[in-house]
Image 1: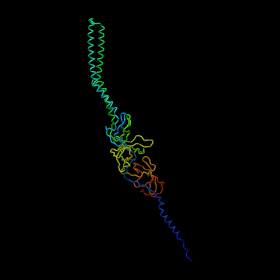
Image 2: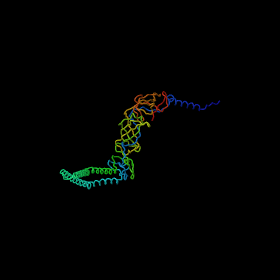
Image 3: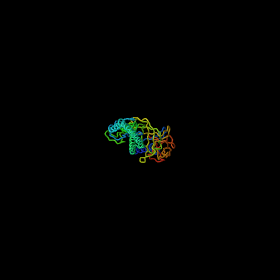
Image 4: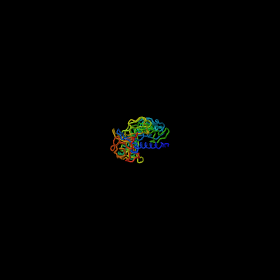
Length: 389
């Protein structure tokens, strides 16, 4: 009787199942493989990074002190200007006419009015002296009964009129004399006209760089109308709005680095020079200014830049990635650590926050593993740690 042969595939299937179970058994017993972060020891630098704009401490608008028509503007955007430099000119024909009129009036005073007043004074004094002598003579004759009393009274009246005219001539001559009232008034008119004429040349009071033109030749300017806007020379500042959550980490004098997207290889040193005492309630930010003592030429007004403020440094710190923290709060947080193959929830004391890492003050040791905060693993579960690359 022929021998019955059984098919091989059930045996092969059974062997495959056994092999698969043998391969999977450690994982089932030890739990799934999870990505973990290692707690490391080393230098830790804490930074606050923000975006800001280049700004000088002061901007001024240079304009005309008097009304007039702008006939020339001698500077434009980007020009450097110095104190006393003429930046614009107004039409000055009317101002020159006023000055010439005042100078002509002074010349007329010196050449005609003053000599005439002196001559009139001498003549008036001579008439007064003659009238006085005549009045005295007639008074003597009246006393002797030689002339009528009415003649003496008329002579006395003529004397009084002559003396009043002499006094008036003296007053006029005094006003027109050198250093007198009339000369002072005319010289003040000349000084005023000269000053107004000088203001037709608009000069800068500061040293700086022209940012914008505010008026063009032909414009009719009122007194105080701006002609150019100038950034006054001085230390350049970066004005940035920093999240209020970083306020407790900021302090005056902290070192900072400034960089611009257009020049990524350049990083300029600066320091925190101002921290606003108020927080913007709309944005939840606080204004911080970083002063750059020796600004390079490429840092231009209103350029957008990044500031990197160093708020702390540890040369030898125990740290872990920030995204491993759970329920972070002031000085404390929680993590899920892997100890002896099982997940354990731990409370930590934390310190300095760096760029992507945080200092561990208490709760973990170097070389231990923690899970990312996004990991969905319950405490007590078995896992196999796989360090993040």
